[in-house]
Image (cartoon, rainbow, N blue to C red):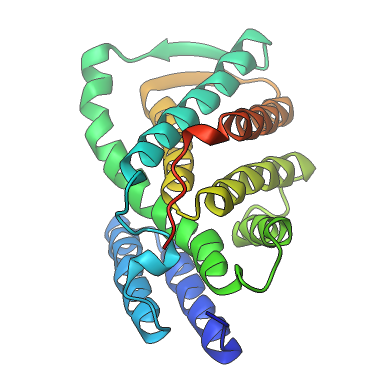
Length: 244
């Protein structure tokens, strides 16, 4: 599908506004309504732009989607936890307390739900939408770079936090965009992204830590995401390539 540029940019802007609107409010219900509502709006935008629905963004339930999602979840969780483990072992952060297994188990269902909708919304906005419209115009690595830069810019409230933050966002963006372009599906990407977000929220909820060097910790996170990219690339034959 060749993009109609007015439709392309108006759709992108609509999704961008809906995604970021809750950030101006502190009420949890507003965030929930808009993150869930994002999927509804994305569905109708896809229909207006000539797709059958969310499958236009790479979310078709074709053969291999569960495998890609589950592998992505395991990968995202593992490499984020690896970065946290290295940070503590290197002395850049101290673990002060850890909740017991029962408390962690109680936190998990809500964490899964709370991280799913922001993850899938951002993956549609910064990756699936661009891929669906631009895959026949841009070469794969050009599209990956464009998506990665847009992913960084989408973190509008973090752009002034330093090169370490921008670097980890860009490296993660590269890994997630590559996974989409290779599998022609958003499920592996979603799994990796969702898994990392699950780990982040569970660590914050289940532990008490004392940071000593946040910059070093962020560089470690960037390095672990780079290692995740290399690992997923090396194991690329494991994933299902899902044509839309």
